[in-house]
Length: 191
Image (spheres, rainbow, N blue to C red):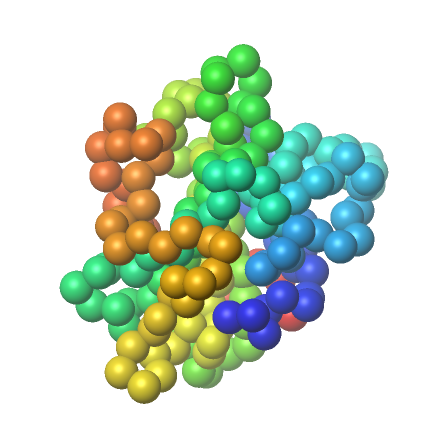
């Protein structure tokens, strides 16, 4: 998936109950090299667009901040379903005591260009209830397609951790997090 390292993606989340949409800037496999706003320090940054001006809200995830993101299979018993990258190292979520958390679900598609879609920026079982501090993104790309009998998430010698269990928000205290089903259709940015 390192072929996705170069492009910077911009995508828009779903509409919030108060009627606006968050804007996300992200770069895969490394922190954003040229953020829209200098306060952005990470690989995923959240903004609000107000009167055609971007206001920085938070860094959602980082490749260089500990704890490092963790790779796993969406379904460990069927690696062909894709892989998920879970990060629990974003900025603090208000005064909740929790860091912002996100999942990147990588799904295979050979019929369309790479796309990124925000599935949710208010996950129901987030450890910071009532706050938009847990995020799910879907990345559809041919690079997530199985080759040579399956996807290998990352080499053990990498500085990133590797796990074989489904991701769990909040260190397991709220129960297992269930990956969303693969979403059909387009959306999100492209690169």
